[in-house]
Length: 382
Image (cartoon, rainbow, N blue to C red; front, side):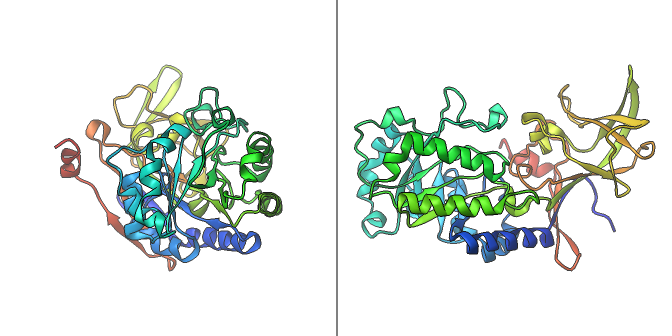
């Protein structure tokens, strides 16, 4: 029996394959790799990730709580800001990265007097802005002009950095290791002297590395990690991909609900939404691949449709797709690579049916682990 739509389907066999590739990279480089929860945070998959990865990257208090509760003790927290009430971060995290010098100075006294720091079981780092954009869409470019993410070198002149033992940067977005090479050149230009200080023992190279993509240049990554470790005399180098462990492991299953003509366009309305269920389609923008009857959509063809979501937002448009046959109401369309930055971003906008979550185990068996109903929608604002 097919899972009713709308539904996310997560394939554990694909995740295992990705994780095995990441384990090989760890063995070749000596680096440590953690899962970025901002991209994928499904606790049902954490046991598999935990078998291969070293922990989680959290962006704030709730993600740090999730990581510690379900994943383990290695929690690398790096957020744009922490509220004064977020002191539990110091009990949950193994590393805390501060986004600016001023924020570190705000927290410095508390951080250095915390019992876990005194016992040597938590360390602190500073996020750096390499000031080198490598092609990311502006919305995902932390090195854009006027960025709010990471300290500029100019802000650190004559600064007292006592208590900081690591540095962090994150400026890539689904990119190959050649982009990392360019970023490291800029990092050394602006922050080489800082990174060579004896107090700096670790470097976190952030996320956005397309580590499990078939065309990823792994040898270049191996060389870059070795060069960085030797150049700066580092004990640890961390990577925190969000996509790589779950690349191509998720799909979003939808049903065609209506078909009609609008001027020159033939419109098909689905029971999924770009804005509510796969917002990167609008934000990046991103065009997901999809299948009909197991056949991939075509680049162009006679049977062309403008696929639209089921919310009342005029711009809830997934985009134009062509198929090997005419669509009909009731057809199932399956969007590919829908694990990362989907479930973590979904909303209940318009109160449309929220996609359920189904796991496919490594034997091919499928089990729905979460479904959503009116009560879930109602509780959002009660």
